Structure formats: C-alpha cells, structure tokens
Image 1: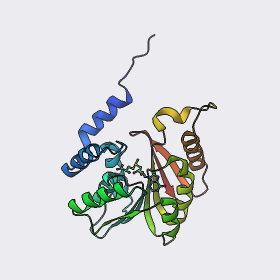
Image 2: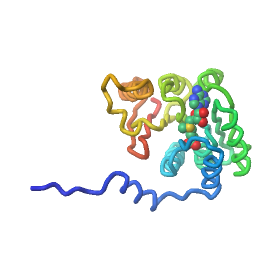
Image 3: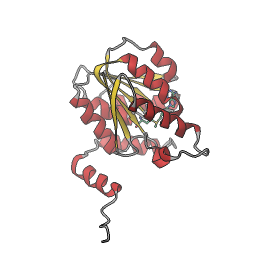
Image 4: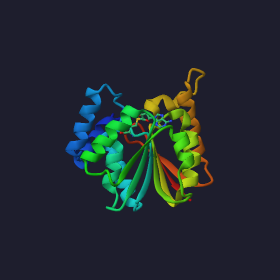
Length: 218
Ligand SMILES: C[S@@+](CC[C@H](N)C(=O)[O-])C[C@H]1O[C@@H](n2cnc3c(N)ncnc32)[C@H](O)[C@@H]1O
C-alpha cells in the first residue's frame, strides 16, 4: 500500500501564517529599509515574530531581554505583546543596526518601551540585572555563543519565565553529525542537548520557521 504524501511543512506553515499572522505596515517598511541598506535578510519571519508575541502574552511578560536586534523587527513584535508599562532591552553589536532599530522603534511609538543597547551581548548581559527579574529572553544572535546566553537566561529569568531561541534547526544542519559540521552547527547541537537535559528548564522545540526553542525556567 502506497503512503499518501501530504503537504510539506512549508505549505502547512503558509496556511497557518495566512490565517493568523498580521504584520504591521511599519514592520514591512522596516524589512524593505533593511534590504535597501544592504543588511543581511536574517530577521525572524513574520510567523516567528507572531509566535513570540503569543508566547509572551501567554506568560504575561512585562520585562523582556533580546539578544540580537538587527533593525528592531523582532523587538517590535515583542513590544506589541507587552502591557503599556512593559520594557524590552535589546542588544546589538553593530552600530548601524542599532541606529536603524532606534529609528524604527521611535517611529513605531515604542521608544519609551524598547531600549537598544549597543555592544557585545556577552558583556552587556553580564552587566544586566536583577537576577530573576526578567520574564523572558529571546536569543537570536551569534550561534557560537548560545551556550553563554543559556547560562545568562538561567540567572536572569524568574521561575516560570521563558527562554526563546531562534534557528535551532539551523536550516537542517542541526542533523549534521559529521566531522564537516561547522562551529555554529556544533554550538547549536550543544545548546539543544543542554536544554533537553537541563536541571533548571523544561524545554521543547517548536517547528516554526527555522525552529524555535521554548524553555520555561523552573
Ligand atoms: C539574526 S540577527 C537578529 C534579528 C532580529 N532578532 C530580528 O528578528 O529582527 C542577529 C543580530 O545579532 C547581532 N549580533 C551578533 N553577535 C552579537 C553579539 N555578540 N552581541 C550583540 N549582537 C550580536 C548581529 O549584528 C545581527 O544584527
């Protein structure tokens, strides 16, 4: 008996996106501006931005830290999920990216809520407090350092707080267990394994976009 081949994951994701995801016009404008400036097109897809905002609403997030701002696309999805007195601190190493993010965050009327800190997130996170004072962390920067960001999430998140991390499927390369796997792939494999067996997080991966790890702080 031949197996019926169903729709691809992409087709199913497109279906869900068409039904549920509404991207604000300013976000479409930001994507176009990033492209015009020659920035890499590595912002989260709209479906992942929408997922972030739903998960943040579900945990009643008010204070969120983001690692990897680019032009502020995901930061604006995050901001949308927070109450009026919510706060986002987003970290970005490239001055040009941070500058565009500030411009669009301002234009979106979110300058009070979203602070862009320019610098290396490894250092900026070390300076960030208070311990246990954050409701969520979204990690979307240098893959080699996801393990460092996991340690900081353990320190910064309150019990019940969520760590969200993008690209944990790494466009399929996560399955590459050959000697050819590069440093980013290995780091992501280590990160996923660490989360799966973590003493302080309950975690899974949602197969949305490039794979989003979702981990709740015990
Ligand atoms: C994938 S992009 C972020 C996309 C953004 N989250 C979005 O969806 O709109 C990654 C960003 O992280 C920045 N980055 C890479 N390593 C970093 C580090 N160690 N500290 C701070 N930012 C870093 C890059 O310059 C880049 O802008």
